[in-house]
Length: 85
Image (cartoon, rainbow, N blue to C red):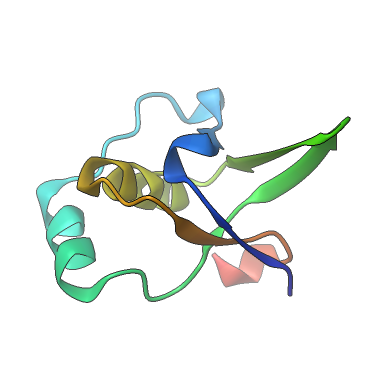
């Protein structure tokens, strides 16, 4: 398992998901409980840069909630299977 701490503003949301918005309920859970599990991302290395992208709506909504909350870093994981979603 490979995990990284990144700024949620630096995590891309796959445009194929369309408009993603974390609802009040999810934001309240994040505010109350914090980040319980890592956000599952795809990692791509482009030259010296690393790009983290979420392509699952639930993961994208969590990233949006962290952004709204103003978190400076979140935990992401790039080794997972579809069964983990």
